[in-house]
Length: 246
Image (cartoon, rainbow, N blue to C red; front, side, top):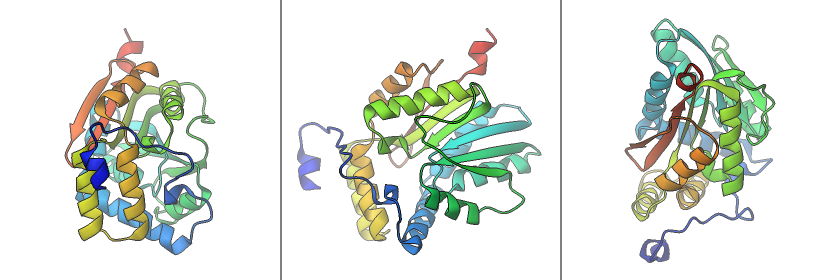
């Protein structure tokens, strides 16, 4: 940790030989559920949930019914929250929750109420089994840092391929300050071993704002907008429909 903070440059530290624990198959189910629940609580407490809500409302506009593909959906807490927020506004959101890990999808399904229009698909975010422009919106939250740069580019390209109205990718920001904040959080507040390991690794794997914006441009995202949020979070988003109507 100290070596990282004192290094002259904050290089991205990514190695496929050192995965995050939640990416490993055949996890202890109790530990994985605890990790997912902790991440959901952190999303609520540190603004991640609210940030996704703001992005959604910006991209959704006044559309009463939307189909949203949520990539690397994890526990599905963002999707469930958006379904409820839309319901409060007398709208309707159907969420397709995509994740590569079957075990994670099963736990997300168990946490979803039967009346919520949320469906679960096990798939690789780099090669989605959906037709071109088959969804209104495509979201990816706190997941892009799990990929190599080339694979992250593939994910962003797939998002641009399937979404006809809007795109958004939210993630951590890599910086010394963010690394220190995550270290303090996982030392004194959240002590779950899996969260501690993965969170500290995640912030070193994250992209800077410039890197994320460059990747989205290379992936063909139109009318790109970059937004910073509190607690070392950022997002890139794009409205596709404004381009296709022109």
